[in-house]
Image (cartoon, rainbow, N blue to C red; front, side):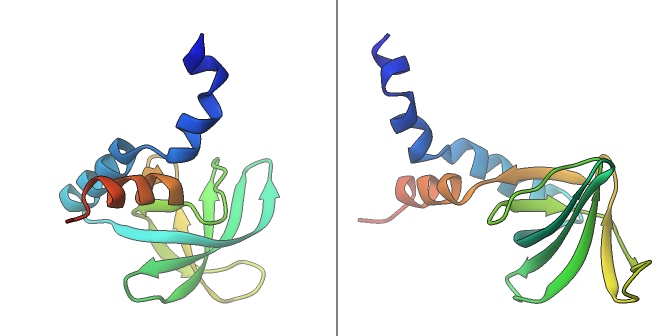
Length: 118
């Protein structure tokens, strides 16, 4: 009962294991770590967003088929680059099964707290 009353506190702290799983997927796959910089279209069939590649900082349009992504979320993705249909700019297409892992800023901070050297 107490845990339920303070569930917001546990959730707010983040989940370090989620970040560990993200790092594990990144190290075992030919994949990229990206951060969702801005979501600019939610459609029935997917999400358009601007992503930032880590650690290069390069920004690029992206299309996540059949997925919703959130601003600030860290993602491990594969996919392919192509030219966008409407704006004719470079776009990373992430199809079903190519979004390999996801974690929030809170999850990353929780991992950093656990692994900080005192």
